[in-house]
Image (cartoon, helix red, strand yellow):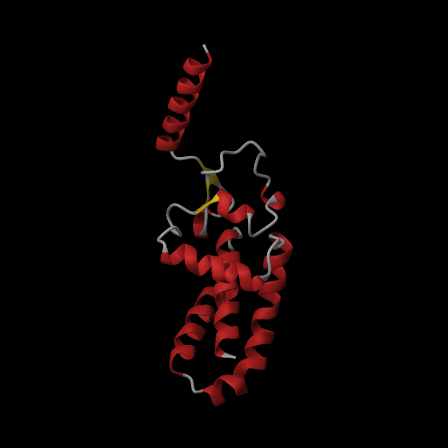
Length: 154
């Protein structure tokens, strides 16, 4: 049961961080952080007693996340992949999340990202939510790749 609550919290952190203004709505960020803290020290009995109330508390946010970014994978898979992403150091509040990773987790059509956006573009999170950026160094790599391909074709 503790794991199920932790999974819900991780899913909400990911989903709400991709939603413009998502982590600032009605104190949701503080509630999530306080619940993480509480989970660390709660006994199994306390978790079992509080789990229905927590589920009710977070249900509206889960519905909002799924409406904004419909999942293409299960919540469990998304959470597992998100944890792997964080452990690999590939999740950053300042640089966002790689577009290619997100496309495997969610239907990104609500974000209106052009189809020809490079796979290495990053989607903003937190106060950058709703924006997509392609780093200059990646653009330079693309330019040299295209130059090399062009020369090889001559």
